[in-house]
Length: 126
Image (cartoon, rainbow, N blue to C red; front, side, top):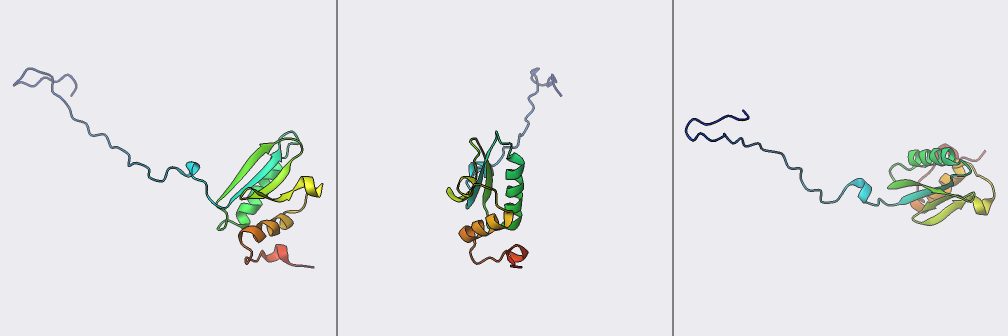
């Protein structure tokens, strides 16, 4: 009780409360770690290509969920849309001048991070 006075001393009783102390984090949080391989999709904010970038990120994460350590969306300008693995460009709109389909980008990413991995139906030829 707060303000309780002990009969023997006439002084306020002191309560001891144990507060749990969280264990120290040895490795840091996931946001502090860079997980490899890191895939980046840089997209033009002025062109409103965020939806295209998020769709591509979802496609690549779904396909390479065990092989990718991290996927980052990087806002840019100037009509940029570039997919990079480990900092190296895998595909860039500036060199192709038009968008390619997801299957082509998946093949390019696969060739960098898991060359032995089959892509299933998206790799079949008609």
